[in-house]
Image 1 (cartoon, rainbow, N blue to C red):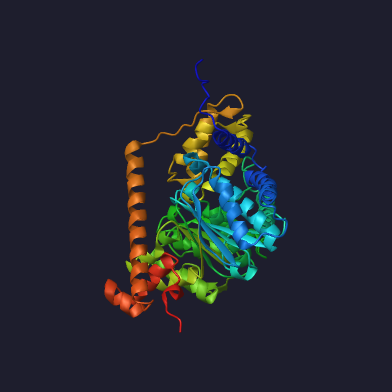
Image 2 (spheres, helix red, strand yellow):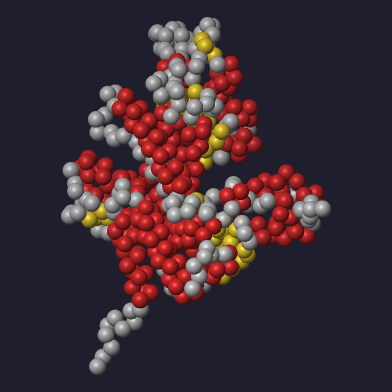
Length: 520
């Protein structure tokens, strides 16, 4: 008798396939977030695993660190992982892994790491009263291995990222971030409804998708800086949503009831930029037949968003600096000084520090607009957000074009995850809009996206080269620091660069100098 076509199907392979397909299905549900689904499954499964372990070992008392470590390693290794203990004490258990139980396909679903976090954290919290799980590295995010820290002491966990568990209570941080996002969303909606009478009825209220750690950090920053008058510089690639973040800051501030005026400085001719921003008096120049109130005056009491601030002319930069320093301005051709109360949020996709060094941007202005800087991640840096962005965009396009697309196929989602997205969210919106026009049925099965092998290879090679050089530099720096016991002066002499450059590299690679200094 011939073997069954599925004779190679193992229980582990079955479960892997089931979970991956479950993840794909949950992606399509939009608001029913797949993290919460994983959280529930993992929490319940963790209880079962612990009960099974206790039955087999006849342990009824609370698990100690050694027993807990044995349990979590056995859970993962018995389903195909390759986990091992790095270190353990009463405050923290660190494990590492070189093979994911879910195989190579896990890179399509980095959200599955939450399952590890919830299983490890739930069991630890039940036995130690508290746990915070920090996944420092992850195969799912193409780090080559997994490094997981389970903190069992709240004091030791302070300052570390991660999911927090108390007894059998699920992640506190998820609830906190959901509440924060709801508050920001509510304020954005309020601002949008106020302005909606003046804008096209086809426009839809803004939404910030923040399932990735980097975007959640941006939300926390918005909450902190919004109530203050501080100037903000938003940096990020084209299409990442810099204006949306600026609107969120305005919406969360006490200026929300005043105007939010966005200006693309790069779209205004250089000869008109000063007049546009600061206004002009009648007769200031040929064609100035009446007084013109500039954007600053129109934004009085509110927020002025200067996009592409790097494109301002030298003269406009000088005037802007005075407005920020003195809170007053003079219209072009005017002699009267006008007091101004405007919060300034600037944005750029350029490296302003580099422009300052090239004398293309005023150094003093740079420091004035850069009191707080928000770096918005590119789409490739926030893979956790992709399914939610896709779902949100499809819902909006359905309304615009009268479609009934409910989801995208697995193949389409894999294409979306594999693409580099140089145009970020804006490009994703454009591609999905083109594709939905020709889509039929309830599922989008084709994506109007052409991969250029030449371009892709160039991008991949550039990324690999930069990552490799960074790893080598970090490793070399750590070796030199260790050899010189953290003495910056000696390290600087050995490497032939300034001490300031050494400190910059420590910050870049998040290296703690204290780890290399000998105490005594």
